[in-house]
Figure 1 (tube, rainbow, N blue to C red):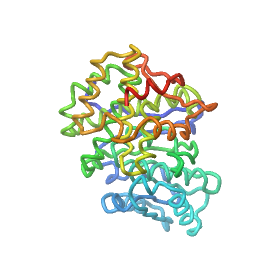
Figure 2: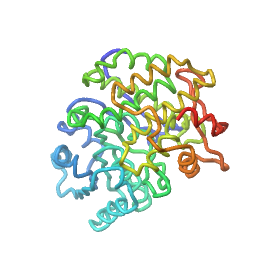
Figure 3: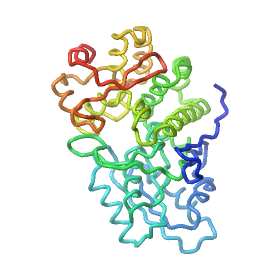
Figure 4: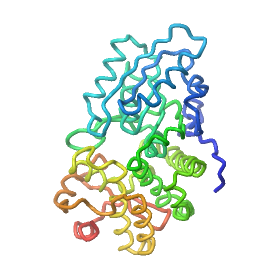
Length: 367
């Protein structure tokens, strides 16, 4: 892989221009403002962010929106609490209420400035505002930049499970300013690396090897390398989403580690484990099961384990969380079909598939 960040475009099922959108990746994109203004045009805006991100980057967004020939642009700012525990119907309602009280029209553009929680909730609000408004993703965490900002999954959590309420609603553009990673705490950055390594495991063995070889540089947040890695992850996801926008088939492989991971998040309490931490443990469980079936080598599992440990990510189930808790949580997962829990496993390094054929003993010995 070179250190030149390619342009990434998500192209969906049809060739119609409104079925594709750009992913802009670069340093200083928010302070420059040109990309954001080109996507928004002359329309009014509902900007959604949280109390952590707002002091850091909100002014750049507002400066970009007002630095145009547009006079009297209506801009509503919704500032929410930070954290997965606030990814709720109540927060979703706050977004919609603010937009309705300010009398935005359907032509308004919603902007999600923050991590995956803000992106998911803002997208869901846009999907349902006056039966559908445009929105733009401005992800500020590594995890949201490589995963949740791309592909159109939006929604909120419910006490019975993660992301059980939502909609598929594609953004009109994604703006990834790598400057935002400079303010990201080490724990949040590490959590993003779980989703990064996932793409190598499920879709690109060479990318997996590349990440392993560059572990130290990734730990050091080498800017050019990280930008390139983000672009590769987005390209892989864009290709999968193009083939299966609504997760009727191949897109399900993106859930590698997530069936176990979502169960961990639910049982521990949303926000106790970061999403990427839960996915890291879930991927490790799925990798050990795959190795037990002879699909990948024990050496590959150890390589994955060492990579995750380098970022202080968990590779086992939480203490005290046994089979009964896992099975109960996973039965309520949104990926259950015909009463069967669906798991994503590896058939080889870089190749994944969906299986419902796991028995409890096979899971239990790999937790």
